[in-house]
Length: 488
Image (tube, rainbow, N blue to C red; front, side):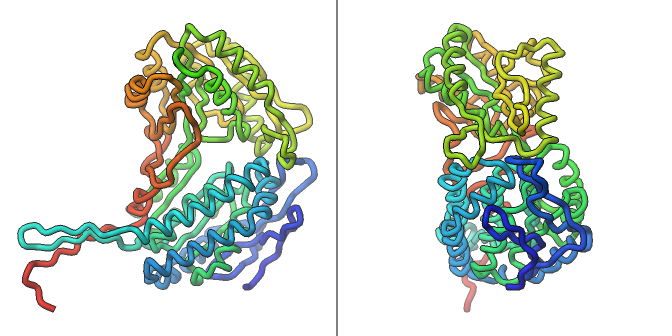
């Protein structure tokens, strides 16, 4: 394999260039990535900074690669995907060490949970394409067969939080469908994507089937999504960026999915297991709140407010802030100083506008940690209720009955997830059925069948990922109609 320059990250050599057409390519321009674990220590690495010319090169390579990969049989594709999954498992420790320093994610959580989930994403889609059967039926003396055709080069743009796992989540269905891919990771956490491209090379994808382009979104990302040869675009990030990508996709009539974060309600009824609810509520501070699925708006039945709060504080007080490489650490630093300042800006404006800071409310000195924070808003219109903060900041509101709980849960422009705690199956179905969100958990959180649809309503995005929903998105659907009596 042609090898570009590398950076040594906790003893792991990580390529710093682009991976295009089966080769590593160094960039004339670079950008730096730093570790939230020790920001002031200087750059972890200097990464190739792609531009419009690199974008064109990558799309052409993907178009060439599609001509080969798109003709692979389902069995051949599944074999390569499974080899990649095995390689991910074999390199779990290295991936976890790199991701922890690059993004700040808890190393033990990465090694034991998220890297394995990345491998599972590829295995799941290998199984799904092998199990798929074309729909066939006879109507009016004609046999109809619905077939999936690979669509073409796909641009996959992934976010800076949990970058490795979310990259595999998006790349797996695109590749399983027979599409070639151009992966553009976030510039705040680009390193694990390079490891993934290295493993894809080892797994045996044909040149151009799997491409990685590094760089700044406004520069190389914008050029990628505007290229008329791209046939699918999938993005996870902010609504603001999605609007720009959607406009580019519309100009070329390219199907586009976007997962844009959330402002999930966490609804607690008086008949629930209060300690379980309070513990899970405190755990919404996981990954310093940098989780789009989190239930950040605590909606608690008024009659149990005080008891719930006491239990919540007990669990939140026990959370350990520290170095994410330490297995004892439960709350890691925020990913970037810009993001820390953004989170603190929300809290400061809330304080100035008369919202009550129940706990926390400040950065931790000499680090990128932020205190786990709970705010009781003066109004449901408060900014901290209505806008995604994406940090360790929760809000607390009370409700009198089911109707008010549902009204509050549905009162933002987002609709990605919600969490409901109740001891009543009937209430779970009644309330869960009326909450407007792509996914509603009852008495649990962060558990999901990978074959189920995933996506949001409103500002939380468009389209659905997961299972056959993602495979259908990445395919062009054809109906083959054959009249009875056709001869060979």
